[in-house]
Amino acid sequence: MMSFRRQTIEVRIGPVAIGGGFEGGSGEGGEAGFGGGGEVHPVAVQSMCDTDTNDIEASVDQIGRLRDAGCRIVRLTTQGMREAASMREIVRRVRERWPDVAIVADVHFQPAVALELAGVVDKVRINPGNYENGSNGDGAEEALPASAELPEFVRLVDKCRRTGTAIRIGVNHGSLSQRVMEQYGDTPAGMVASAMRFLRVCRERDFDRVVVSMKASNTRVMVAAYRELVRAMDAADMHYPLHLGVTEAGSGLEGRVKSAVGIGALLTDGLGDTIRVSLTEPPENEIDVARAILQACGLDRSRTEFIACPGCGRTLFSLSPVLEEIKAAVGHLAGLKIAVMGCIVNGPGEMADADYGYVGAGPGRITLYRGREVVRRNVPQSEALEALIELLKADGVWTERNADVEIGSDAEVVGGR
Image (cartoon, helix red, strand yellow):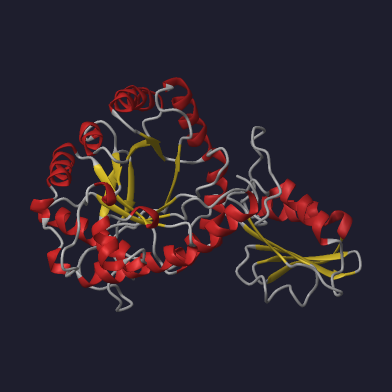
């Protein structure tokens, strides 16, 4: 598992806690905000309903499916007061059936809707571009309005502080305000300036239940914006959690690769407290991809992870069908890392951090490993899978498969859960 995460204040979004670890001062590594502190919560997986919010039954049903897939924070669009009324009923039903799920209202263009839902939902997501209006005058940063000139946002912050509602300041690359565009243009620096202005208001109002996102469909812009934001927050002694996502990533392979590149780059920096993989597909599809990204970054072990070499002229058995056979047999063992390697060259060294290894030792022969330790040599391939299962049983890590769980062949070579 990754040994460091950026430390933040803990923020509670209804039943879900994110971030954490910040206790003031620098981390053990000497870099502000990183290293050893208090408890840091696991990175949370989010998604968003694609239902009509006024279709209460369909929305609640989809929230249930997302929860079953492993999602605990679900966002719904709330365009107006009619949707706000529907959200009240959705929240009531969800809290009755699934009290471990946090509900987020996504509000654009109508600050009054956000104000209406503070105290109803667990978090309100707002776009700063909808609160900032007008020109920046001479363009000097000091000329940006103070909190007194953002009365609608101040009212929202004050109500959220009273009601315990979280706020996500969701900056989007494609919807910066005229004020920001005039000074910075459509740039990561402009996104950071917008976020920091709203964060300063939160601090002035003594409100710290805040999450920040800096989304863009361009992965380079998105990664640059988050990194620049963290530098700006560190300089201002701010320690708010981050929600990561590549917006409008698309579908299929393209959407998954873009999401993995953008989100994964930041997670490996130690940044990020919640993530969403935005796919143009049923939202339930996003959850498995998000978990695969977390696992690839060393931040989640709720699935079985498989290390497998691609194969070459040294490979001593047909890797692909053997890997699929092993995944089907042991892919339900959450938290294990199992290596399937074609030969001794890619065996003990390359699979050093695996829990168990299945390594080609000669034509039709397999050697089994526990970590780097050889457990059985030259097992006939026809007996090797059963021998691996017996080893897992002997070590006390075997559980029987839940009949309702189906193991798929994920492109990331990670088993299902």
